[in-house]
Length: 242
Image 1 (cartoon, rainbow, N blue to C red):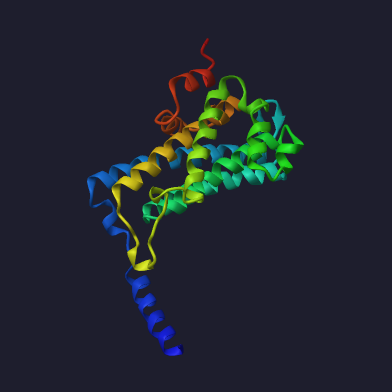
Image 2 (spheres, rainbow, N blue to C red):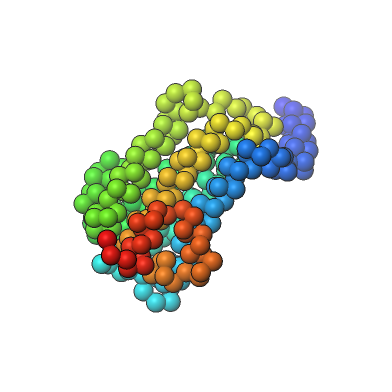
């Protein structure tokens, strides 16, 4: 038994020493998907950078309530963007199921963060179904933000299928690390569609909740936002008449 462990660990060392993502950009189709994913990931991280700065040096308002940096809700919002980054990194490695599961986690922590500012039940409930039900009545997810919240909820429902391995299409069926990194185009396309829709909705909800997240960004960052958000969201933050 010890000999088998040693032999297999030696193979693992060889595998890790030679592990590379160099081939992930050799296909133009994969490169375009990764490039688009990078655009959405950078948008999310730019938003988080402004939110983090406001919370720690000034004040971060979410609709009509202050989100304090020393609060569970702020930690949850932080984790949301961590999940978004993890999802992108996992997808590059061909870990599409973990990528989708991280994205699902991002939606849950985001929803709990903002809803928890307005509802003690949203902050404490262990039922995800109840969380979304309560959140739908909270200020950050109402008004102009409601269509984006509905789309976010829809994305969560779709991503749950990966967590629960609902069909063969939601399963990985890979039993060896040597199968990675995977470079499958179709699962990456599916992940990309979820990724884009999720980040667009999160960005829109946050910008409706606080225009400063756009206005305090550098012109270069605003250019990145405009690659992702819809025209009506941009016009809102700029104060254009509806």
